[in-house]
Image 1 (tube, rainbow, N blue to C red):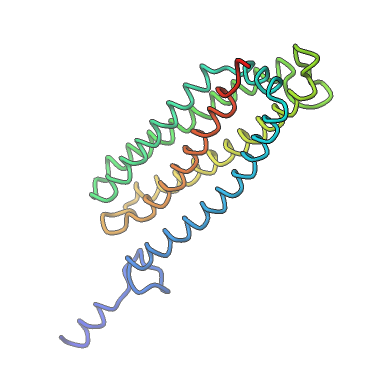
Image 2 (image 1 turned 30 degrees about the vertical axis):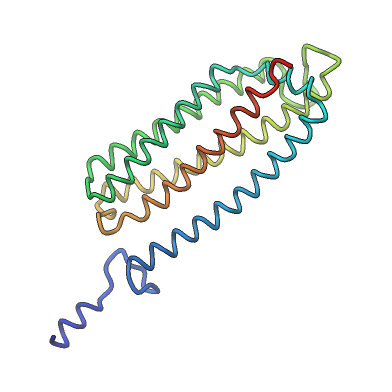
Length: 224
């Protein structure tokens, strides 16, 4: 092999960062970084879930009554929307791995559209809570006066938990927009599909968080 050929063989690919030996090493490092990040997110949401569980154990009647005031239909629709978005995200990853650019763009757009639908439905729910004065604060009002104080704790946790989840969804939409641009301009290829895979991990995590939030907030103890 000539020196010129050897030099060309060592020349980094366009998608390869200079501090990695090859794309496989770069993918492994990026994937590990995402899993470490998701582990910290599990700890973050885990603390909120623990706080919610403790307060629900202390005030089951108030939490059940407050849960009953949530719109279970909208919550169920949002659950179906996010499960479907996980499917389209998985299909986008498969399209990236097989080099099907048009399908990749299609499934990314579908994933983003479903994410936007989720946020729209959540905005409708929030608007209803404001109209019913179920937002914690000076104007808070709950129909059952005896449970009002503890019901306010429920709604505090409800807005914190669902609000943080919605923020993660907005960030996910930003990431998907970036991936869509890369897919459109050809940066994502069959050989360089790791950004879609790693973005998919984040998207699936956000969906899984909602799978826990829905039964905790909307289902458990609502008929207590």
